[in-house]
Length: 185
Image 1: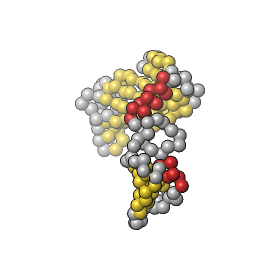
Image 2 (image 1 turned 120 degrees about the horizontal axis):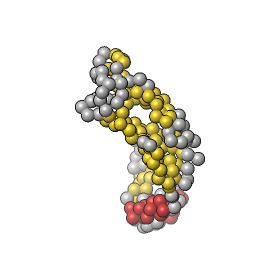
Image 3 (image 1 turned 90 degrees about the vertical axis):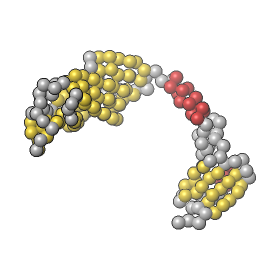
Image 4 (image 1 turned 180 degrees about the vertical axis):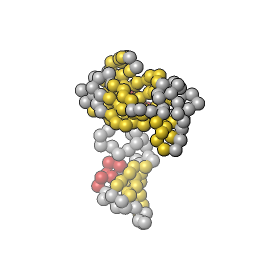
């Protein structure tokens, strides 16, 4: 464990002139504090910045972050599309968020092990072919059932999955949802 060394400097503008040494605790005349841990210097406490900066290591006021995000969102537009069981947002920057929702009645009848049974492999086709798939998030809900959804595999245009349960059933309806995040161009 490093020894703590307290240092005081006139201004945070001079912080880069001080070598990073594990254990340094630096306080500046303009109310900012820094701690050196290993080979990193981290700002702590002090006065938050009142504007975004590419060079400042200080925290930023919440209202500044909110304004920055709001301004960024104003520049991104998207098209909201509904196609069958799909709803998706195609952003002009190439990102896409896709949501699938359908009522299904899987035939859960093949014994896996013990009292675990599963359905045949099923496929959901995307409404368009994506250039990249970053995330696939499934959800299955059925009243009074302990269904689990298992993604077998997916590509830029399909998801293949199966459903498991602790008993055989082929007449229970459930709601299947997927959320996919990726790029379309």
